[in-house]
Amino acid sequence: MINTLFILDFFDRDAFVLINQRLASPAVDSTMIALSNPYILVPLYVIFLGMALRKFKTRFYLPIVFIIIAFGLSDSISSKICKPFFQRVRPAFETSLSPRLPEKEWKKDAGGKRSLETKLPGSRFGFVSSHSANVFAVFLTASFVLGLSRRIRVILMYLASAIAYSRVYLGVHYLGDVLFGALLGLIIFFFLIAIWKRFDFGPKNVFS
Image (cartoon, rainbow, N blue to C red; front, side, top):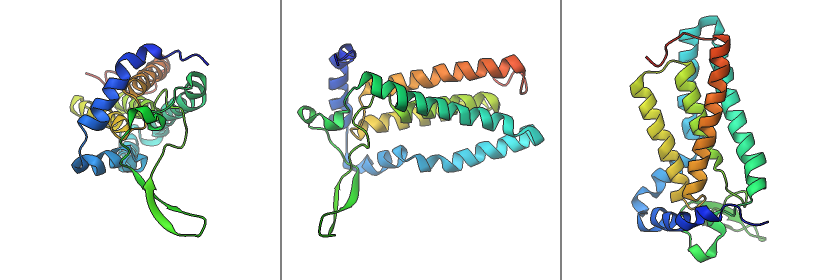
């Protein structure tokens, strides 16, 4: 398949080397690995649930359903449609880039001996980034349906950006992958909020 993303390669390879290698430091590796771990967001999702219960009472399921749909759409579209269609190989598999892959995992050899080895992505293709699409879709949707304050919205956008950045830092995505992932999340957000407004599910003027 002809690489339809060749235009991105003009800046993506240089941007990748800059973030993954020149700006990288062992001192922040653990932080970036933690940011890429989806389980780190579990406490935040629990907070979202608590806010839904407090603001919507017996109708708490409404914002939660929209947040879940945001995640489902972003994850499915990015993983099941975009990656197989564009087939853009992740930088982790591009030996010409000499990617720096700080994330490790324990593996067993044929004899059962355990050793710490470089952790490679589970899939070969990376456009668009599911991590980036998911966090932007979920955080934007949650911000709206829960009526979060401006300060909290800004913090969530910084967190989403940090998670997206960590994917490039760890060598599993190009910058273009995470930027277009964020764009996908934004599109899904606008789609869901149009439905939310159409049926007037929640309090008005939540962004005032």
